[in-house]
Length: 293
Image (tube, rainbow, N blue to C red):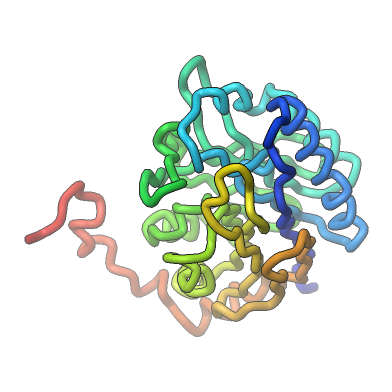
């Protein structure tokens, strides 16, 4: 019997943060997502991923310590606890990107993974932290991830997570494949301009090179007061051949749903023997900190 997993991506605009207290903003953003999660469940999704630091704006557009107040522990913080209840209610696996406080003064860009029974399975912490271009001051907020590239066994497939800027680095994408991922989510916050043309290039390339499904999520709209650019949406699923199988619009809140035939992974790997033919013993510079002149 075919292993078909119906999966969902949620792309959304963020409520304006101008003149709004941060706790109220966070609550409003969470409440905006709850009916979208319910919509994914109503459409039959068994797995659903939200966008990067979903319960607020992309605050890395500025450097201000007030945003530290929005971080919380995982799994013991209120948002993870709420999402455990939501996952249990809808009988749906949830991937929930949250600003994590690991200890006083130490913060991560993290995604919690919760199964359909509401059980917390673990978390992924974003490894690659940009501090470049006006408006992407992430090193001010995030410590580089230290939990490796875990893959979470669920009833609906083996799930991995890569977050936003991670997608520019093929090494971690391969680690997820080697760890058994069948579906890798990349929740992001990226704006029109320099890297937009890479949005539909890099992640299908990861899907092809590693022969798994990819779900890429981006938010939409302009976020005030910074307005560093247009978050251009276009969230999508692609298959292990790198072909798009579902895609959202550029400028609307949207729930993207697709049926993923996980048996396709075996069929593709039977043809393209990339894992058999790789030569790890010859890749001697990959883990070095410098390059060869």
